[in-house]
Length: 215
Ligand code: TMP
Image 1 (cartoon, rainbow, N blue to C red):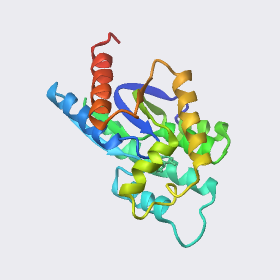
Image 2: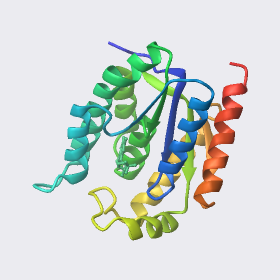
Image 3: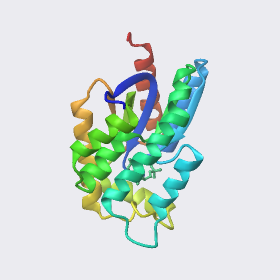
């Protein structure tokens, strides 16, 4: 049974609300790491393995019955437990960088702050089912209404979580910001109100600085 949550210097996650521009930021980080000669595994949560992607489908498109918040949390961690064992740990062990579009911080923000589930329960799941956290987490921080306006244009069929109300996303945003403030060593907060090119540049600068910092 894993009891400690250990950070790994080759593990980078990207977090943020809806419409914050994670996709182009991910591409910029991948390019930067590859240009430095590293193998880079780009992955995402929920998902990242065939089974975890099936869980993602259940999580985002469950239509048959309402998904209880507790079920949502456990499915997020079921997907993560699989992802960590099948993809993240093996890649880190062979020396690759892992770049994950979301990780456990999303569960604290969405299921903890958004849905109001007990943080101690989330911490216990993190310790026992995951045991690993990123060395660097980039939080793309964006005003909730601005994020909504951006996704409204591209999402004709919003998924189950995207269909939540603004007050849910305000709690999620505050949750992310509190986590960032509590772990200054690990987090870099990027102002995602900038253009995608500016966000990509800010993210790349943060990753370069972190790579060059003595560890
Ligand atoms: P994405 O749209 O960024 O791919 O993320 C999928 C959705 O899943 C997004 O609405 C955030 C949500 N999510 C959680 O609620 N908890 C989690 O632990 C993760 C990883 C994602």
